[in-house]
Amino acid sequence: MNYQWSLDALYKGYQDPQYQKDFSLYIKLSTQFSQYIKTMNDNESSIKEGLKLLEKEYDYSYRLKMYSLLIQTMDSTNKEAIRELQKISDLQSSYSSFIIKIENHLGSLNIQSADPFLLEYQYYLKGLKDKQKHTLNSLQEDILSALYPSTLKSMSDMYYHLTSCAHLECLGQDMTLTQIKNLCHDPSQNIRKEAFLKEMECYQQIAEPLSFAMNNIKKQQLYISRLRGYQDPLDKMLKESGMKKETLDAMISSVEDYLPIFQEYLYNKAKKLGHENGMPWYDIYATIDECQYHFTIDECEDIILHCFKDIDNSLYQMTKRAFDEKWIDYPSRKGKQGGAFCENLAWIQESRLMTNYNSTLSDVVTVAHELGHAYHGHMIEHHRPLNREYCMPLAETASMFNENIIYHSFYQKADQKNQMLILDIQLSALCQVVCDIYARYTFEKSVFENIEKNFLFAEDLNKLMIDALKKAFGKGMDAKWLHPYRWITKVHYYIPDIAYYNFPYTFGALFARGLYAIYQNDHTFFKDYQELLKASTTHTVEETAMIAGIDLTKKDFWIQSLESIYQQMLQFMK
Image 1 (tube, rainbow, N blue to C red):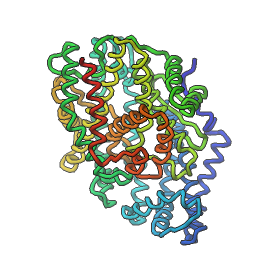
Image 2 (cartoon, rainbow, N blue to C red):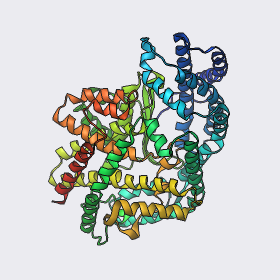
Image 3 (tube, helix red, strand yellow):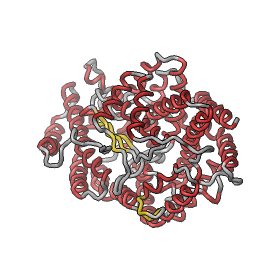
Image 4 (cartoon, rainbow, N blue to C red):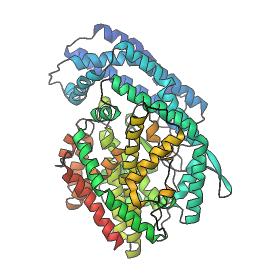
């Protein structure tokens, strides 16, 4: 059976008349922008015209660009997709000065209107007003926009190309880097260890060019954030996300309080696996007992459908559609990007999900995780186009909520032996989103702190990563068997215009855990949960959480979620 996605609902190729029509309409926006800017004023009809023009640009650029990006995800060497992406990027760059002028104009107005269209954009317009404080003059914006494709974007493209094409002989056969990484879940410790060593060897071959990519991306992010009047890239990320620093501080401080508990858990688990000096990285996903859970893709889909049917019909129906209409690309193959992601395609009311499926329980959870992103997209697909961007901290809410559904369902139906195994797998995943994410956050902070002093070669980045891992995992991990190349493993460091895409995973895990606890006590809460997801694009992070009565700026909520993990650890160790 074919377990690859279909993109036909978007376009049936670059010669598809609909693709050609949309591209032509996108090109014609140049004239519409020029005409509008000459006549724009502060009356209501002009404001609405400006917003609708911004909607068109967002809509057409997103659908055209996403089609090529999805093709390139499956084949990083696809020359036609690369060429089309370049054409779209060039057009976007040429439109940026128009967009900035319109956004500056709208942001400068004090709009008081009862018009339903403008009321829908109240939060967005407030964002434009705040954004004005960080907008450069038109010449500076034009220069940054013109340089983007050949600087930040090109460094990011190089990362995708090198990591998706990397391959090496492992276990007697030629394997892609992604296939080698997937062996971290193999039941055999010898295979896990061999795969880890081969993974390190693979990274060594591409580490130096990727150190150049890291340096260039992070230095530019630092420079641009300061140029725009932010303290640093973290300040920029928080302000653009509508999240208070107090919320981040409360969460990070709570995590630091509980790190010794996670480290003790890992240290004791390592002993059970026969390791006296903490856990070697190749066993970080290992289970105490051999995992007998192996699922075909069909079984994976049946399990998820069964779990979701008990939760809510809208979640179930969307998921059934995703499976029936082939929204998901499952198998690993040469040239395909590693990891997993979901892209919401609101204009066709669908999503596309990518995984590198390897038949484990963790893979089932990953599919459910990405379906959470699709469900989040489903909740906001009827918002107006400029209201469809949810901020990073809330981006992982629905995905982590789905993880809780799957783990809870498996646990409830398992016998005592398998309950221990499920707890083991879940706690391993939680160690990743708490300890490993803390290390990734610490590493990125240290990169920004050091990058102006010296160029950071691969060996320098390795050292910063090892220091961050030691701080996060302590005695829980064997210091001789850490993973110095985590800075290559994680694509998030190479996203051109986003820094600190790490702590949102901890945020999502702990926030969703708290929401799921509320749901378990009151199943009618799912309606509030849906409203919360809908509000995530038109309210601040703190306002969105208050729909569930949660104050994120206080440590109480974060400690409650972390304490529930600690109780699971005690249960597992017992």
